Image 1 (cartoon, rainbow, N blue to C red):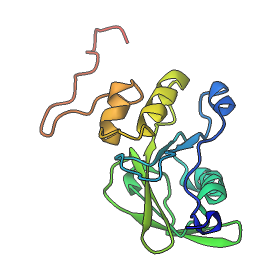
Image 2: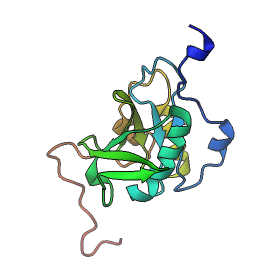
Image 3: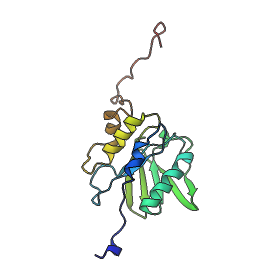
Image 4: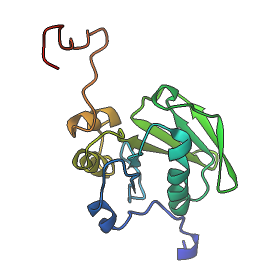
Length: 175
């Protein structure tokens, strides 16, 4: 296969980008292996849960590295006011709602080329977000997104199904 026939694969952003991580910063890192054998292909740390405000920057960054993005799949319960499509850079990007959990977003380019990205909660600390994102893009990663967030302190642990949530402070307790 000639070099000109080799498809472009996700590229790693320069390391300098990761040294300037700030709270609430939109942050994207893609797995750099051609095999894409890990559970996740990348990670994203949005500023907020407002998909209309956050998605254009993500799509612009992904388009630069992957080419045109056709669809985005995410959990409607994790985002504010979820539209069915957005026009980004004069292209229609369809938004599908799936019960994938609020810790992943599915990106589709073309008909069947999917990328699964870890979504770090906006309120995560920079250290936790960086740790989660770094782990998500490791080529041999087999840990699911939700567990990465718990392991790195980016998200509080989820209660087991049927478990009672921890009790809050009582009437006489200090808050």
